[in-house]
Length: 253
Image (cartoon, rainbow, N blue to C red):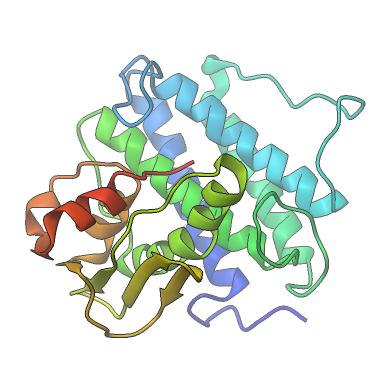
């Protein structure tokens, strides 16, 4: 059974966030220059970013609906046409949303991250993917709008719950020595992050680390993903700067 659509962090809430951000991206494609460079994706312009996100939506739709990764024998994804980019973006997001709404959150699925293979993974991941790239596109054309603070706080949690473990498992990255405490100042959200002989740990609590970073949730999230926002100056670094810099240098996948 699907969760209450009014519940924060329910599958429906994530799907609504996904559709809102996809529509904002699509609206940008109707009015702005598609050749504007995207700072977070060197060598890409807005058109290439739109193609990437639209294809990700279609790829996620296939994975969620079929319970497996596409193979070379599967039908190829629709090609990107800049002339109809906005409609193409909205269509892919709508299809993905329809698929995700039809799934029991506890149903088995497939995804490429080292966490439980259940369908509730997909609305959360795609909401965050879409929000981040919507911000990238708006930043590229000079009018970035904030990421919803509650979504951003959850995005920080997701970053350490699934992205860091994937980087460790897939790329064998070495995690920094020392611990860091992250503290959202506008919404709920505190974490202690550390890596030691027992492995990587994320503790959702107010615990002191070797370093700390306080600030608005969206500013922290963007900084973790290697984005410099207009709000970066609102972040308050505390403690061992080398430890904090090492964690912030990881970026994303």
